[in-house]
Image 1: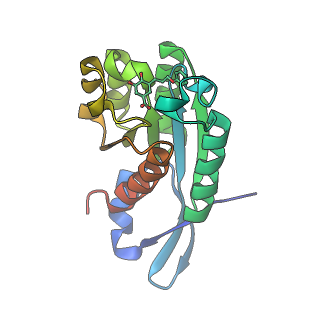
Image 2: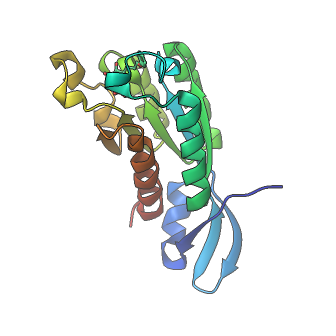
Length: 183
Ligand code: CA2
């Protein structure tokens, strides 16, 4: 069986147990505890077209390449990661509802649903899954309608404007947040 691991401080462990649902203790090593951590990445509508259209805004990297970069970073950071893309709001809501049973945290690029979806926002807030919202483009440099996010108020953090590196920053931020939670 394959596990991805993360070290956390023993003193933080009791709080960590309360704050994460899916991490398992693998072993104790001196002052450190080895746990596995599982993170879900959700890509919203039209992100399956990345690299094929509008490269001047969203770059030339395909979604498959982004997922591969995320997997590589996750491996280096010793966490498990899975990616999911859907053009359907309902499928994204279902995935978030399911995620609380399987994942410790969520990275989501809700794409156009960022600016419209009360349903995705409610799924995140009602499940309470720690969430980082990411955007490839800097939404605050774009049209006014993109400057309103229904998701940001229920997210732990937001990263916008760093191209595909936004996902890597989001992953790093989420892991740190999960480890430090309720400290
Ligand atoms: O910058 C981002 O990551 C966005 O979430 C991307 C969304 C946009 O609606 C948000 O305002 C900001 C759009 C995703 C559409 O992706 C495409 C990729 C290639 C070609 C066309 C669309």
